[in-house]
Amino acid sequence: MPIKNRRLILLLILLFLLIIVGASKLPIAVERKITVFKPEVKKINGNDLLIDVNKNNCLPVDYVPDDLVNISDYEIPENSAFMLRKIVMQDLQEMVSQAKKEGIGLKVISAYRSYQKQGQIYNSWVAQLGIKEAQRQSAVPGCSQHQLGTAIDFNELNFSFADSLVGIWLYQNAWKYGWVISYPKNSEDITGYAYEPWHYRYIGKENAEEMQKQGLILSKFLEEKNNI
Image (tube, rainbow, N blue to C red; front, top):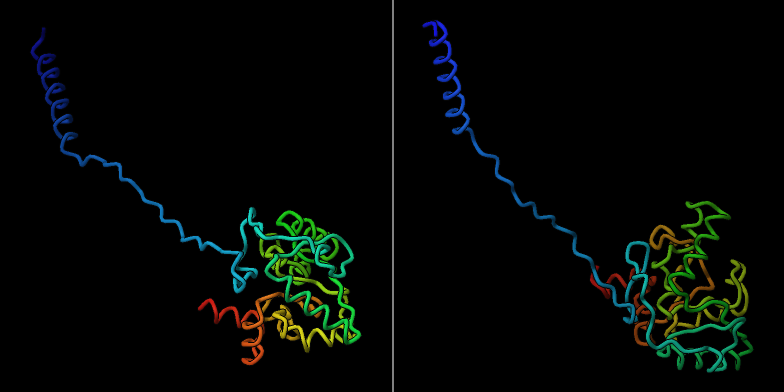
């Protein structure tokens, strides 16, 4: 073999060795384990009479009160077959009875709604009004007080209800029986919902009396109670 070829081969071998040695000194990529931190999910206890259910604090899809009873079993006037939590029924009966003595006819037109039922109602509003307006009038599923089984719509879904004898009586007296209006007039910037003079929620007599004395609307009262 010619000397020139030998030298060329030796140079190539030497170059190859240099490349291998150099590569061995390069930093080795180490696979790092990445820990993903998930935000803490606040568990909502729907059985708590003072739980604040709103657009930012919603119930799970599978939440159903475990003490639901048929309103018809308690001789409460209603326009359909509705259910409520048993814990509200004694005070509701007392309120309906007293109202009747004073010539006021209370009637339940909406009570407990499941997550799925609320979804149907919300979608109906969206179809009629569009998303933006629907969100003023109706809660998305999971965010409705009706899923708690402690909220009632009385008599009629009409703003004129506020000025009717029944509406006035409720506004002035419902708190005495543990029921308070959820979405009062001029509070949409706080509650996120339009005025609903027919919608009341049960929080118990003592709590309702405390709220009345403090002059707070329900959402603010619940914020204080839950230290939000």
